[in-house]
Image (cartoon, rainbow, N blue to C red; front, side):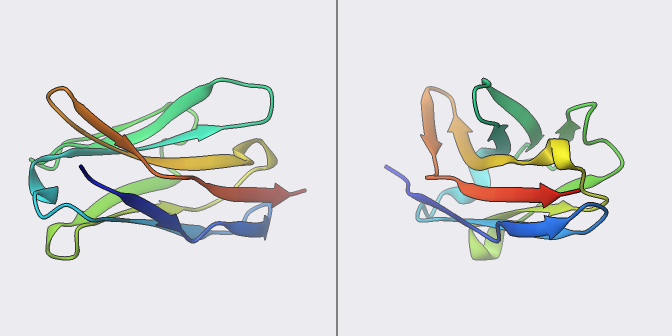
Length: 115
């Protein structure tokens, strides 16, 4: 079992930046594929970005060039640096850890971007 705890959300003006963090409890963090998802009110949960244990990254088209995912295996932490934020980025952001059939989610952190 692994627990994921997100932090760093908040209210920011359009064009601003935020950095989300997700700390995991597992000591096998380095083998997990880590990801960030988001869910806006009334919408499905969508993939934002992922990073494999080998460092390969994937970004949704809507965030390419604005968001950067990174991980610090020594701190069991994954980050999402968000820049040039837009009102449409407003959502609850969830951290995800995946390895084979194991999958864990954090509780989410709210990001609100005002116009």
